[in-house]
Amino acid sequence: MAERIEVEHVSYEYMTDQRSVLAVRDVSFTVEPSEFLCVLGPSGCGKTTIMNMLAGFMDPTEGEIRIGGHRQDGRSIGRGVVFQDFAQLFPWRSARRNVEFGLEVRGVSKAERHDLAMRFLKLVRLEDFAESYPHQLSGGMQQRVAIARALAYNPGVLLMDEPFAALDAMTRDEMQRQLADIWQQTRKTIVYITHNVAEAVYLADKVLVMAAHPGSVRAEIRLDIQRPRDPLSDAFVEAQREILSHLNHRPSEPEPGRAPPPIATTRRSTASVTQSNPEGGIP
Ligand SMILES: Nc1ncnc2c1ncn2[C@@H]1O[C@H](COP(=O)(O)OP(=O)(O)O)[C@@H](O)[C@H]1O
Ligand SMILES: [Mg+2]
Image (tube, rainbow, N blue to C red):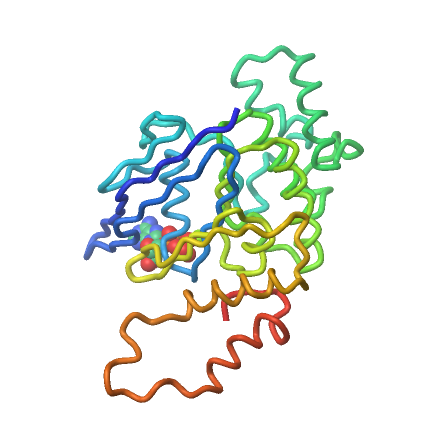
């Protein structure tokens, strides 16, 4: 079961004591069933706000979100969500019993829960750690338990908010490979939030490039690069360059009659993807 996501003219305004903050302005996009969408943008551009609305934790101030044709709002139950924070697991439950949690809530029998949990732990290659507790697992392993738990709910969509951002670069590479495998095996609709250009190009069918203040969509880029993707291939590097050109583009410049920015700046930003910034984060 993979569902379609429709986001139509969605805005979100935070109300604080002194003032209101328009975090997201008029964002629209769709994610087809089984499609892998990456939402990419700098810190503060409203990525987590969008994720919280997709998960049903918050209502859009304006616009509408539909998942599988049903309107998603503050009364919907957030399922299939994986956060950046390692502390999302229950520390008093083993890996297996963390994965079983949602099934317990749903009233699935003990035997069936056990079988399903083991199946998803196997999918994230943790079947040998089923009885370990979160504090006995590395950060990457804990994130894999969180992914197994999200998948065990059998959600129509899997929502991931920078789930690997706090991992070291090598573990992150391995987790990205595993996630690409898991997606190919489960064919879930995935929305994956990142501020890392290379990560988006490695994972996504489609990348939504966002700009901040207020958070809005700057470009939607479809990636038809063959999988598994090779970060050293021409197509991969070219896609990174295209995405960076949208990220670096300032609508207000160059102003008419104003000298273009120095070439060195442009070169440095390009080189930062291919050479000096191997992690591919937003420069
Ligand atoms: N609870 C909140 N109250 C007021 N402003 C907020 C709150 N959460 C986020 N914001 C503001 O909304 C904007 C988008 O935040 P967020 O969605 O967390 O961005 P991102 O995940 O892309 O870093 C930022 O300007 C942030 O300061
Ligand atoms: Mg965020």
